View 1 (tube, rainbow, N blue to C red):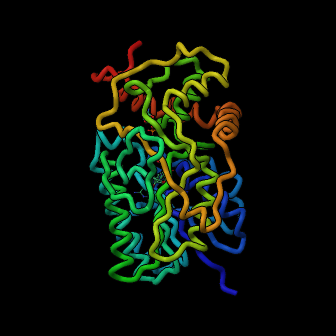
View 2 (cartoon, helix red, strand yellow):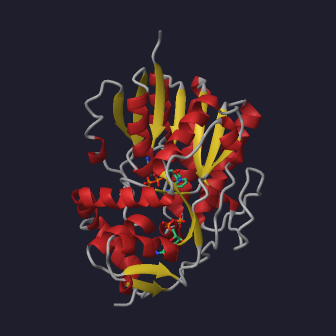
View 3 (cartoon, rainbow, N blue to C red):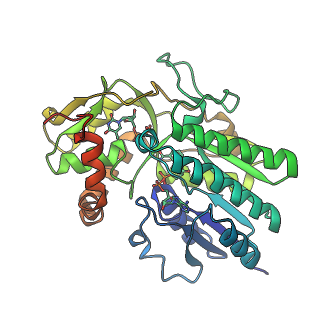
Length: 346
Ligand code: NAD
Ligand code: TYD
């Protein structure tokens, strides 16, 4: 029987990286191609265990480079595309929105054109709950798949634009697509600019942790492996053309998250530093995952177990994140928190 070919874009980043490892091990009968530009957020060192496998191949490239993408698809004739590649950090999108439009919108459209050209079996577009905008603090309200898209940051606006293109390619050309919209992820290989890995790495180094505004904004946290299993299910069982929300009902204020990390590590809450709020800071995200549960999905991690394991992973893999925070990232951190905005006080 002919082997199936799966293209994973952004498979050297946080979620795509976890997904590639999950899928390479689970489906030895598939050939997995990881296409990644290796921006600041991508690194290959995380894949040293799977690099040796016969069903894994890395391809360096830009999803918005039309000529290369078209020739890659013509050559490999992929069966499945699982699309993670994106600029993903809200704070960076506030400082420099242009690259978010280029990668998240133009890049997605390029992949859709190439997928249409070769006639793929399924295109899964990995999106975010942030496209729905924000909820207020009423704990009985949730994002459903029918919530209107009202993105507030340049990041979420670029993701919402790409969601609309994916939908349009299905409605107009019949491209077999699914869109997943997941809540905030955490787990191994999370880049230390995002709240949880930033807090763990800074607390381990006894450095101040910047909490935006009053710390009362709420995010709904999901372990990255539970996100991977959701995408796997949608890829194989999702009804063509449908959107699926992904979330495990783990709502926490940012302050609760930061304090739980500090407490697990046995450090002082004096490390918390309240800093100037993020512009347009969304108050609350919370997912209703009923539709995905009806497809057969259930999360395996409770936040309390998942965060303890994640902290242990950062202790055991200090080399990985230390090499990141000592490089180009240091410049980013200094500009973001110590620059003329004076976001973090010393
Ligand atoms: P990430 O920033 O860790 O990784 C992004 C990856 O994409 C990197 O490896 C980077 O090198 C690559 N990339 C960037 N631009 C590219 C380009 N032009 N061509 C090819 N590769 C490129 O992101 P993440 O947190 O792993 O998020 C992955 C996807 O999941 C994104 O689409 C994001 O919107 C979505 N998502 C993230 C979360 C979250 O909590 N992190 C939640 C829901 C959805
Ligand atoms: P983040 O990890 O950037 O994810 P997102 O903005 O996509 O939800 O931020 C999570 C929450 O933590 C968000 O409400 C902003 C807040 N935050 C801080 O308070 N301090 C920080 O240094 C960062 C990076 C985020």
